[in-house]
Image 1 (spheres, rainbow, N blue to C red):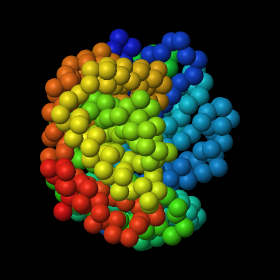
Image 2 (cartoon, rainbow, N blue to C red; image 1 turned 30 degrees about the vertical axis):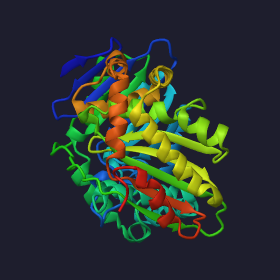
Image 3 (cartoon, rainbow, N blue to C red; image 1 turned 180 degrees about the vertical axis):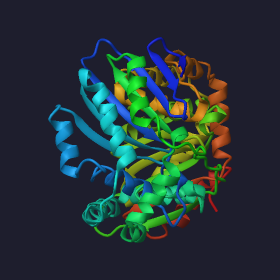
Length: 431
């Protein structure tokens, strides 16, 4: 075991088989967060298997070789612990949160769930219906449909364009053997991180992780080739929807490729009510109740996104204003906007740093991408180093790239043609 420490409270230990143990000592807490991260998600799925990571995550709690679904739930709750899980584009995670004295027990319980799930046939048929209900909720949400459409416009046929929840036909078709085969292929030691945050002894946690995961089979690291950005404009009419939802965006650097300027640019344009985006669209023009600008940065790709919910009659004005705002930022960054953005990002980073679960997830993703956990000072230094000229240059690069635009919900007549006319002011307008 070779310990590697970054922030003073953070320890990373690699077990002989490649499983990494991440321990963040937070002695001021009385509770503990325990997570197991697996480097597999929708980015790692073929089209035929799209959605299987999410189904595996649901089914992992439905019984192991030693415990039924009911025993899994009771064993956690009799200790007062919460149990949860989530699937994302680039990882799957299993979580428990409870009293600090039970940290080792939680590591063992999650080890049983991750390594020994049997995916009982009867449970699969029941859970399939639960997931299909979840899928129907997504279908009924126009903004969610807009994001799915946006991802396809960004990345075309690449796995990065696939929704985490998958597609209905796959959910209806997956068999128990499909789940077993996927876990056998993807759930291997080099792709697993056992992460704990709370008043813990890192060496004690490493011993618990060794007992629970030390015999896990090795295998290749789950990697994905980077996608090519496509761009374009498409619409999705949603019956019964009274609002028009827009997701508009450009390619941003992946996590390894210095995305700090894009992150700061998004905060400059649209973080907070005083930002140019919110001040113009909502406060001065009344064109939207909700609008935001953000980045989604992963290991293989990045997206710079403007999203808003407006009305069909305001859609033309929305595109006019957003196009002008982007061009204005590419010409000059106001010093007060850069100051605001830096401080907002610093505060957002501090909030995440003070939330054990968010901190564990950020640290785990750092381990996957960089091989080490960035300290908070390192992260903040990267943000602080971004100059106004770099942000301005980033906006110029963005609007010179092919734009992707998804319009969902109530879509007015000729919306696509009219949007194309208004976005013609951008150098990388959609095809």
